[in-house]
Length: 253
Ligand code: PGA
Image (tube, rainbow, N blue to C red; front, side, top):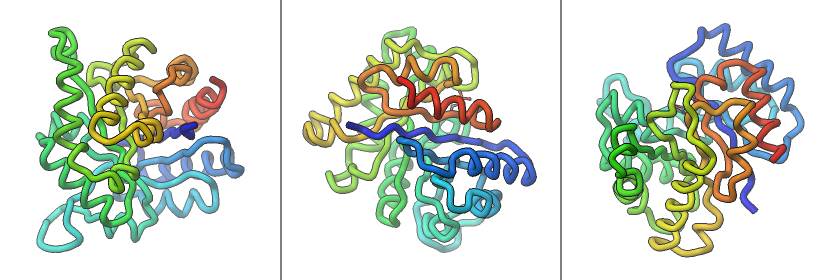
């Protein structure tokens, strides 16, 4: 049985006060651990504020990106050791906004994934096709290419630390969610890729989150699919009510 995993990706949103209030409210509601892993990923500059506000709650802290070197002359970048220093357990890598807006390549993402794992962080590695790729029937090949380029060079013991997030680009921030069948088909394909590259045991144990317009009203149906193990939530993670609704909905399925 894979333990559900709900993560909030706050992206470049909220003021420090808002981040602190949101984390405080979530921590108050989630002081006793539900049967699910929960993480929030605030902007770098609020990591410390949010860590303090989360206190002893069951909510883990994650970052949204990192640079794959421990230290050095890399102006403007943040290292895995710095993230650990601030209490991060997770880091989102290869998000489609970084792939498409910042031009990150599979190679660069793979470098970050290996470096995160070596430092002791657990990466959430995102893959997903654009609308154009889906419409031209390339979804499976794009997902395979991203899996091979940014993940499958890991050895087995490294791969155990990974969570994969399938996030169709056309569903991110658009209000248009993939149907449970569309999402399940890609999640099942990913599990087959893992089984082929590694083995059945790893394929059965890795968690694959769905991301793209997840809301309290659609999470239960998504999570009811056999290969969907959680959600990476953007917009709906910015308010306590909707994020908590998603956590409850995920546990309801
Ligand atoms: P969304 O974003 O929930 O706002 O669609 C998801 C994500 O980008 O991780």
